[in-house]
Image 1 (cartoon, rainbow, N blue to C red):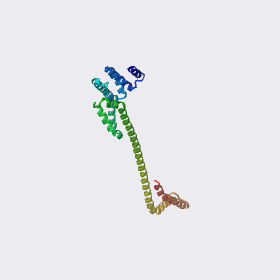
Image 2 (cartoon, rainbow, N blue to C red; image 1 turned 30 degrees about the vertical axis):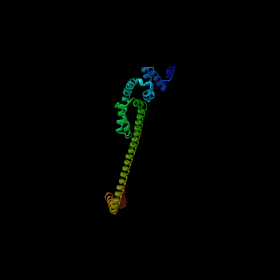
Image 3 (cartoon, rainbow, N blue to C red; image 1 turned 120 degrees about the vertical axis):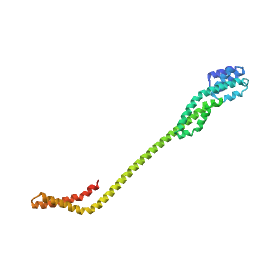
Image 4 (cartoon, rainbow, N blue to C red; image 1 turned 45 degrees about the vertical axis):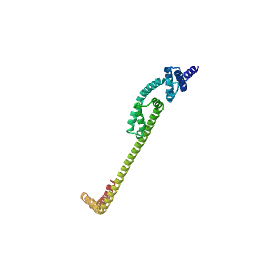
Length: 247
């Protein structure tokens, strides 16, 4: 009757781990290790701790050889399914660790993965790690990678901003130096022309007066235009430095 109720409970909900374990006990007590191990497989897949519980249970002790062989077969099966996933995760993590500091700090996780690949873990360790540990480790590595990429992006932007600021400052310094050089040239030219202005007026006036005398025959017109051209020549000569100072 108890066996029937146990099977009915499992049929209604396959996740009733204790029911699966009790079914395995019933079969073992009935000297039917085959069905017992099938039921035990369901139990240990859901709760790996039943590996220890079954090994210590009185109903399983008469069949320890079958139980140990079953455990070893399941261990190899779990290991064979876990190895490709761990190898891929380890390969990705090692590659990321070369450029991302946060991933490199996950070295203990990589060591744990390498240890699992050596094939020395027992069934309980493998089942527990496959059920809980691996996803936790892989998520931790993924989180570290995300943090590292975010940090690197911030650093890249900060570096770009610093370089842009450096270029801006260099340009401002070039403009400042150009302004200083221009001001220096203006001051030098003003000093130089301060000595030259009196002479430039005389030269400009002389050129204007001479031109009037050469091109006009009327004496009154010569004198009038001579004075006018002399003044114009002086004005032009006086404004020559202003032209150069604005260049």
